[in-house]
Length: 463
Image (cartoon, rainbow, N blue to C red; front, side, top):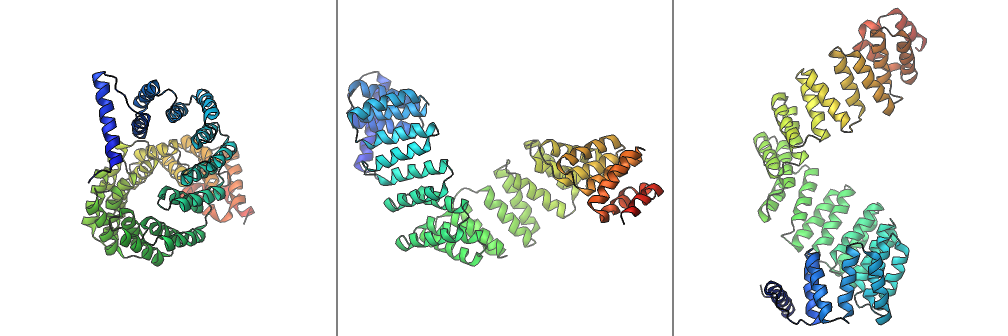
C-alpha cells in the first residue's frame, strides 16, 4: 500500500520531530508541520505530547492562530474552560470570521450545558465554513444532548447531504428514528438514500435491522443479502442475517452465515453462542455443548454463554452438571444475579435446601426482586424450620408487592403455625379480599391450617 504525498510528509514530520526530542536539538518546523504533529498526538490520545508540541510550536510561531486554537482544544479537554474562553476572545479580535473560533466556543458552552447558545454559535460557524458536514454533525449532537431527537435527526440528515460517506451521521439518524419508534419512516429515508447510493452496505444493513424490528423477516433477509452483495466482507450483515434465519427456523442456513464470520475474522463469542443455539434446536447436542464451551472460553465474562450451558443441562435434567457450570460462572463473576438465580433453582431441584436458600438470598441482595424469588425463599426457609425468617422475608416482599395474594396467604399460614392468630386472621382476610380463588395455596402448603375450623369459617365468609 502506497501512502499519498500528504501522508508521507506527515509521517516524515512526526519522525523528524520525535528524533529532535530524543537528541535535544531544537529544529525548525513550519506551522503546518506543527499542526499535523499535534493532530497526530491528539488523535492517538497523547495529550502530554500534544501540549509539548503546542508549546514548541508557539515558541517558533507565536502569532499562529491555528496553533492557538489547538491550545484551546486541549484546554477544553482538560476542563480549563475560563482560560480557553479568554484565549478565544483574543483570537476572535484577530480573526472574527474563523469558523473554528465559533466551534470551540460552542464546545465550551456545551460543556457548561448551555446547548441552545452552543447551537447559535455553530449556526454562525456555518456562514464561514467550507466543511458543512462537520458543523451540522456538531449541531445534531447538541440537539441529542437536549433529547430533541427530531431536530437532531434533521441536522444529521443535512450532514449526510453534505458528505454521503459520513456513516457516523447515518448511524445517528437511525438512532433518532429508533428512539422515536419511527421504523417505517426510517425505511423510507434509507430507501431514498439508497436510490443515490445503491451499493452502500451500511444503509442496506440498517434497512434490514428496521425490518427485523418490525418482524418482517423475509424483507430483512433481502436487505442483508444486498448488504453482503455490496461488501462480502461485512461481518455485521452475516451476523444479522443469521439472526433472521433463526427466526425463520432455518437453523442450518443460520449456522452457515455465523460460520462465515468466524472465517472472516477472529471468532466472536456471539457467533459461537448462536451456532450452539442452532445446533441445540437441531438436536445436535454434542455440537451445541461444544460451541457453548468455545463461547465461554472465548469470553469468560459473557453471562449468556454460561447460562446457555447451564440451561442446556437443566433441560436435560442433568442437575449435577448444571450446578458444576453454575459454580464455575459464580467463581468468575460472583455479582451476577442470573447465576445466583440458577444456583438456587438447581440446588432446590437437588434438595440442597440450605444452598438453595443462600442462592435466593444472594439474588435478592443483588437486586432481584421478582415475586418468585421471594416466594421460593420463603418456602425453603419454612422447610428448614425457620418460620420467623420466612415471615421476615415475606414482609420484605410486601414492600414491593403489597397486593399480592400469594404473599398474604403464606403470611397467614405462617402466623397461624406460630400461633399468632391475630396476624394470621389479618393476612388471610387481606388475601381473600385480593383473590378468593387463590386460597387453594393454603390447602397445598398449609393443609393443617386449612383444616382448622376458625380458618374454614373465615374462608366461608368470602365464598
